[in-house]
Image (cartoon, rainbow, N blue to C red; front, top):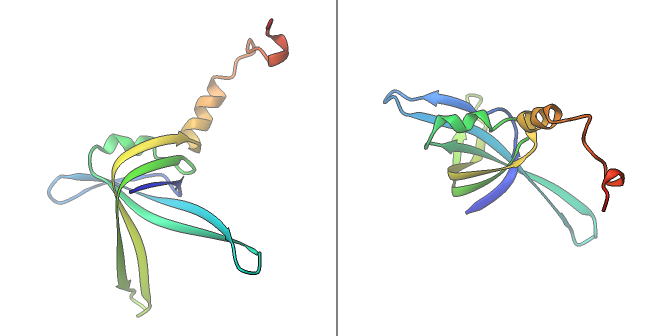
Amino acid sequence: MNIIGRVTKDAEVRTLSNSKQVVNFSVAINDSYRNKAGERIEQTTYFDCAYWITPKVAEILTKGSIVELTGRVSARAWTGSNGETHAGLNFNTSQIKLHGGGKKSQMAQASTGNKNDKTAEDLPF
């Protein structure tokens, strides 16, 4: 399954008791549709994601980044300490493709700004 969404906060690397490392992050997917009355309905779905292949990917998974993920989804349910029932979606990620956005992309764009850059009006053709 593939999903495309925006990272909701910077990724975190956790080291488990068996010394394996996992990258945890959350992705929000926005969707909209019109109901029978013609009203536009906005809906956001959140996925808690896990990536097990390399912890280095956490460096690029920053808040606001747009990512395309390949993997498998699973649902979970639990009862909170206050007795309230909760549910969530997990996404076990096998591939990550960065589409831009986030802090690192913004910093890269800012650092490439150059006074010698030409506008479309400056080009000879």
